[in-house]
Image 1 (cartoon, rainbow, N blue to C red):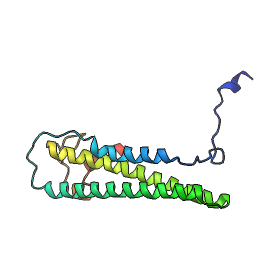
Image 2 (cartoon, helix red, strand yellow):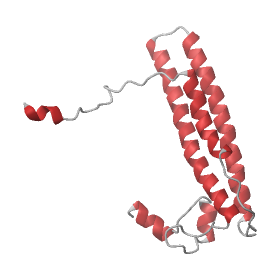
Image 3 (cartoon, one colour):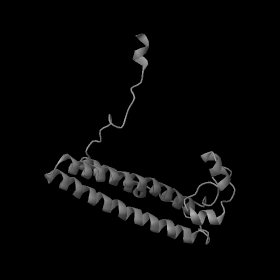
Image 4 (cartoon, rainbow, N blue to C red):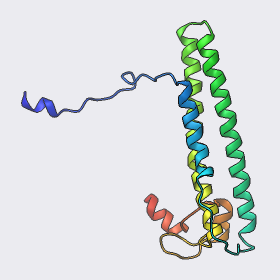
Length: 164
């Protein structure tokens, strides 16, 4: 069968085994999340619109919350791994521990994505580009910015991107 070489393997849930999380992997994940904050370029001085100051404060507070959450998740994950390795138990106990570890890693990844959006919004506020749609360059309405302070598009352009 000459065509059988080109067939792709079907991956099922059973065929994908979750690998245990290693201790050094936790540190790398947390560093990746926190690197978003640290690697920020220093913006040039621009006068921040008084209308955007409350949003800047809101974004900065959320950034601090996420950073604290990531540190807390990292600490919990380290403890879970240590407990899971030193604890006698059956495979169900260990599987439950690994599920919690994977959940923590997923939460850290979600935090990383939100943190990147927040950092980009803060940079846009500091550079004077905040509040303008990056697609059509029209002003993003203030109610939208208050609801989603990291919004980069007006509702019309965002709907087009999402295919709504």
